[in-house]
Image (tube, rainbow, N blue to C red; front, side, top):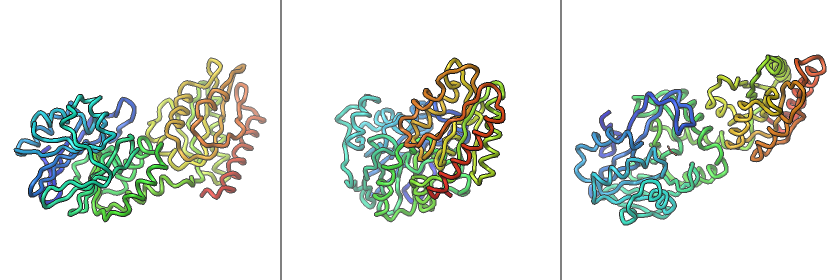
Length: 392
Ligand code: FEO
C-alpha cells in the first residue's frame, strides 16, 4: 500500500496485515492487524515515527522511495513489531538520528545492535522542533513495556500513541469508521496486552488529560478521530468495580463436568448473574481475555486428570493470573474419579489474583442430587457477594 495522507505533510506508512492469525506466537488475530509508521515533514526536519516488523520492511522501503532525507527516526516502543526495521531505515538514511526514551536505548541496542552514537534520548516533556511543527515526548511507562512513550504533535493536536489505544484489526479505513467494530478489537487488544497494567494506565490517562488531543494515531489499527471514545472506554476497563458477571472457562472429558457447567450456568442466570462460558478445547483465548476485563467472578470448570486439573484449565488459570483482571471472587467446579489435588494446584496458579476463593464444588463421577445442590449454593453465594459489593 502507498503512503496515505492524514493531513498536509503528515502521512501514514506501514503494513496492513490481513493474513496473520497469531501475534508473538501467543495472541490470536482473528481480524489481522496493522503496523503503522508515520512520516511528518516539518519545514526544516522530517521524521519517521516507528517502523514495521523486519520481514515487512520491503513495504516501508517502497513507501519511503520519494523521501530523499530523513532527519530522525523516533522509536516510541522497542518491541520488534515497531522497532524491527529501524536498522534498515538507518542504513538507508545514514545521517538520521534515532530518538527514543532513556529506558528504550539499551533495549534497542541489545535487541537490534544499533550503534550507541546514533541514538538520542529524550526526557519526559522534551520537545523536538521540526520547524513549523513541534513534537513533545511524553513518557508513558508500562503501556506495555517499561520504556514506552508517546509523542504529541502540538500544532496538529495528534497523539502518536504506539501500542497505547491500539487495536489488532486490518482495514483499508485510514480512520475508525465503525466504532462498534473498533471497540471490540480495541477491547481485545487492551485485554491481551494492557490489562496487567491497569493501575499505571490510570496514571498515564491522567497525564494525557492535560493535552488537547484531537486525533490519536496508534501503531496498530485505524487512526482514532474521536479520542474521547477510546479514552472513555479505557477509563471503564480500568475501573476497579467489575460487573455482575461470571466468566466460566471449562473443559470436560466424559461430560460430567459439562453437566455441572450447564446446571451451574442456569442457576446463576436464575439468580440474575450474567455468565460467559468458554469451552477451552475450542475457544478463542482472546474472547476469554475480553470477558475477563469486566468479570466479578471467575469459575474454572475442570475434571481431575492425573491427579490435577486438565492442562487446558491450568493454562486458563495461568493466563488469568498473568492478565491480572479485576475479578473479586474465584471458584472451581468439576468431576473426579478417585482423588487428586485439582483445587490446590489451580489455586496455586493464581497468586496475582486478589480474589476471595469461594468453596469449590468437586463431585465424584457424574453429578447427583447433592452435587447439584452444592452448585446451587455456589451460585447463590456468588449472587449474594455480587450484590453486597454493588456489582451491576
Ligand atoms: Fe505492538 Fe508492544 O508492540
